[in-house]
Length: 434
Image (tube, rainbow, N blue to C red):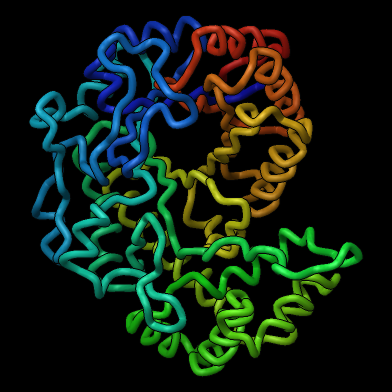
């Protein structure tokens, strides 16, 4: 198996707690890592994510990051055309340092590739709620979407420009080979639950249909989306009509939207297909097309900007959702505007009850979309809930799929024996870096 990259992500507090040199020693010697990247903007998420405590961090048991702080120096001049500005860490042990430069210096000294990830939310969502509510995503009823993220809408001009500028700025001013993002795009709304009333003969295990119907609970239907959709020739009134109806069907119960309760039960309780839902509600299909066109435009602008900043930069999308097309990501549409895609499936940490069926199929879905001239990176979990046996099996499966690289998720959560199992697994199938 020939691949070009074995990547590992690091957080600024990892560097502060364990030291960049020590971490590089561990990853290169144990896992043959040749690509190091910093999560340079991180959303609020308890670390380690999948277990209570760190296993190899002497400084702390766990860490609670700030909301979407920037851990490197940005040039404020690049943000002159947007109201949103980068917000930096206020923690004493992190602030005032350019953690990306610390990583890239160590990486260059050791001959590795270097990169950065701009994670799910790249602006403080609490600040956005308080100071810029007009930039947040709204559901079909015009209400702010009640989720934990408080997603900004990329169709708002200030948000779009801020996102573009963030990518341009870091590539322009730092020594990185690639820039990766798992940016949250449009809120999918979530999977609609099976009917509260059903009989034993009803077909209620319809995960795909439930997710498609759940799109009606997401966003965005703000004024910026309305203006852009109409400018592109979409039938906004049709979209609103059908999505409002589906929104009520999705939420119908004995106490809310009662007129739609039987439609909810019969839709989710029967064997009706997703195709039929799209036929019956053409506004749903229009809405999905609008989402895809919106996100493709964003990727195109980011891609153009980062390549203006550095011609040979690798712009990498980090796929992290089960149904990306419902959130505006169409791999065939964004293919011209990415250089590589990382798939962050971490089946290893959940026991791989499907023997990596989902991981295999997702990687093939991405390859189908981006073709063979763009690189595909397969991630795997080296976290506590994985096992050495599962890691070895995962590598064996992925090794048959023609991927171009591997990526560890994530060093801070890892068990050392899992890092060693990774090395043993790639040696067992004769992985060679080229």
